[in-house]
Length: 599
Image (cartoon, rainbow, N blue to C red; front, side, top):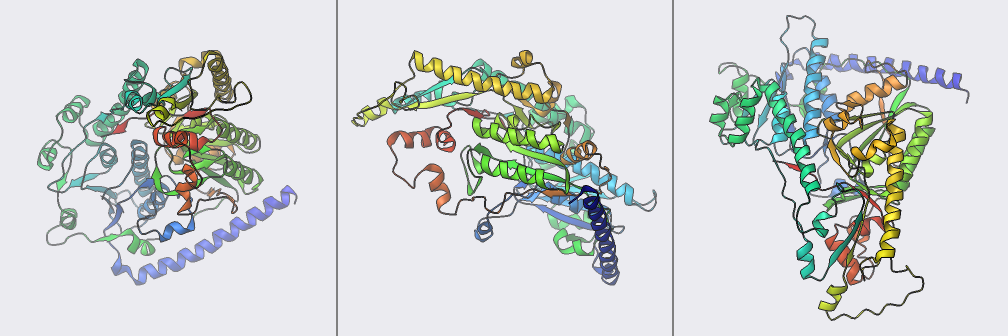
């Protein structure tokens, strides 16, 4: 089909969609007038589960698991807040935090979303004299991440027994070298990047200077983000904020006296606080009121931006999803075969003018990373690729980001970790402790190169180091080419170092700080599309024939428990976090280090 005809059909489809939407909006607003008495002053949104950037792909049978809850997404929250901002009768929105699981990068994205809500509200208000809508955050428990979100709101309320527990940052890595030695197991590790410390907990007895230095500079950046969020949101001097954190925890009454919150109230008392004792405000859940909110037709551009979400640890083969998070892997893996199919589908989709690659991964297989990198490089030759990083896009997660024309991260995104590592458990002494006598027969001088029977000798170690240096060199080449950096200078920011998004911007490893909307605007600009909200996004899902593990076989297949195991294989699974099982015969890893956690 010729391109002019394709363009005509796209414009015709957009025009028909706009007309149809106008009709639906008119009918919905007519219904709203009929049921106007059901409208509310404040809309309630409950955050009681895991929060993700976009709806994750999941097998159909997850819906039937009794403990499974579909995650909330920032994409859905954005759509909900835009609907609320556009209703002339709603006074604001209340977020009830009830055990929401979110990281600091997600908290920063939510804070940006709150700022955008106020922009939408100002845009939709008929007169400047009309009262601005408010965002109220009600916290039952306070953590650093949830409080960063709350500081972006107009008002904060807590329950009487809520404790202000923004305690700062804490990390306590545990080292198992001597523990493994008692079992007769040792980890043989080869790395050429001193800050690539992923295997240190198993190969070292204590923390190396590089390990400690890296945690310190990450903490410096993350702590600064938390302090500045409180400083700007609560209008408190930086020195006072730091003192309050150092002297925490604070009771609700103390937090109120120090200006950290605005109200102490139970949930049922919010209506009176936001109204008056004689005329309390009306409150209603968004799920029950959203159909009555005022609807406005949205412009639709004939072209769209595709979104490819690559989430989890990278491995060769098909992507997999698990109902129970696994160590290192989490809830899903990025299969190179599945990712290749997604990227090729985006290349062939004429609707897409650009593609956003959404990455949230600590890395994994070097081979899988390179296969995905190659497909993204081909895609970018035809359509601009913009990378958006989630909580983590490090090691192999950064490798696949390198082809992007622009890379967007949040200030608290953990990225970088440009380095390579290889390790294997040596279980000879463990077999001896069990009085198990292995008899080895081999052909080929290095047939036992990756076996757990021995430590690498000098010749084998030279070959391993050569392989590591080759992969590391290619990694740096990908980065130098993609980021227009000098190859010879990369060791100063590479060598396994992990950076926050704010630090990565200084080192030119990313181009911009912000949320998904920033990446969408950059994608539109790269494709010469308008940035007025008329360009839709289309999720590029895995093809229908992609493999998702079945409920009972998922864990067995991953750990190899569906076939006989040797003691060494079980040791690898138990002691190396499933790395060897995850990567199969691909022995060179691009895995980010154990990363600090918020407290």
